[in-house]
Length: 462
Image 1: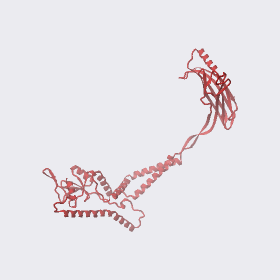
Image 2: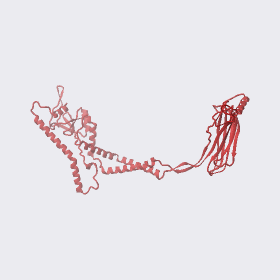
Image 3: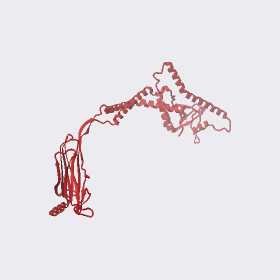
Image 4: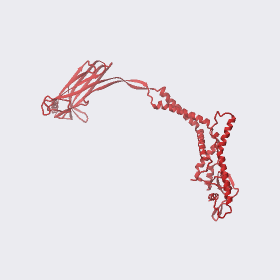
C-alpha cells in the first residue's frame, strides 16, 4: 500500500482531527443524547422513589403458634421354647427378626402425648388395631380384610410432657391360622396377604392458649414368612409431629440491591451525562464549514489511498503536462511549460474522473495538491488547509480578563500554532534550493547519475 501524504505534524494533526470529529458528533447527536440522559435520570429517580419512598406491600405468613405431638413405639417377644441360643423366658426387645417357633407372641406399646408450655383440658386418645387382608399389589384391590383392636388408651386431661400408653399383644401363629382358615373357607387365595398394625392418635384441647385438635394415623407392617416375622417400623420408633399455625400479614415489600442501589446510580449517571453534555456544548463551538470540508477531505483521502500515487516533483517540473501522441505504437510525453488546468471541487470527484479516463491520480508532495493529467489538461484538486488553534477547539473562558489581556493570549496562541508550519515551509524552501544547486552542478558531466527527480518523473510518465 502506498504511503499517505506527509503532514506537517502528524501527531498534532491526528489529535486535532479527533477533537474535531468529537465536536461534529456532539453537534449532530446533541439532542438525542440529551433526551437519552434525561430519560435515564427519570428512570433512576422513579426506581429510587419506589425503593425508598413507596416500596409497596406484600403478604407474608407469620408463625403464630407451634406445638408438637409426640409418639413412640416399642415391641418385644418372650422366648417360650428354650434353645441353645436363647434360654426359656428370655425377652427379646426391638429385634429386627423374631422366630415364630420360640417367640410366637409379639408384645408392644405405643406412647402418645404432646409438648407445650401451658395446657387446659387436653384429651389424648391412642388405639392400636391389627389388620390382616388379601390385596392385589398392582391395583390395590382388597379381596378380603379382618380388623381387631389389640390395644387402646384414653385420658381426658393430660398435662404437657405427660403421656398415654396403649399396650398391645399379637399372637402371630394365631393370625397365620386365621388367614389359613379364611382362605380354606373361600376356597381360593387371591392377591397377597398383608399383616400390619394401624395406630391412631388424637389430641384435642387448649395448648399455649390456643384450642387445637389433631389426629394422626400410622401403619406398622408385620412381615411373616411362616418361620420368622419382623416389625417394619417406618417411623424408626419415633412418631413426633410438629404442628405450626400461621397467620397472613401485610408487610412493606422487600427492596433488593438492584433497586436500592441501582436506582440512585442510574439517576446519577443521567444527571452527570446531561451536565457534561451542557458543559461540552458551551465550551465547544459548532464546527465551521471549512472544518467540515477538511474532515470530508480526510475521509476521501483514507478511502482512496490505494488509488493515489505519491510523487515528489522538482520545482521546475511540478506543473508539467503531457501531450499524448502515437509514434510507432508507443506513447510519448511532451512537456509543456504552461499546461492548461481545471479545478476539481473534491478529491472523490478527481479520483472518479481518473478512474473513468484511465489516468493516474498523483499527489504532488512539493505543491501539496492532487493532479490527473489527461489530453494536455491538468485536473487539479487543492486540499483544504486547516491549521488548528486553541480558539477553534473550545470557547474562551468566561473570566478571561480585559480586552488587552485577551488579545495578548490570542496572539500568543496564534504564534504558537503557526511556528510548526513556518518551520516546515522554511525546511521545504531549503530543500528546493539544495536540489536546484545539485541539478545546476550536475549539468554537462558525461557520467552523471540520474537524480531522484528524473526518476520520479519517469515513473509518473510510465
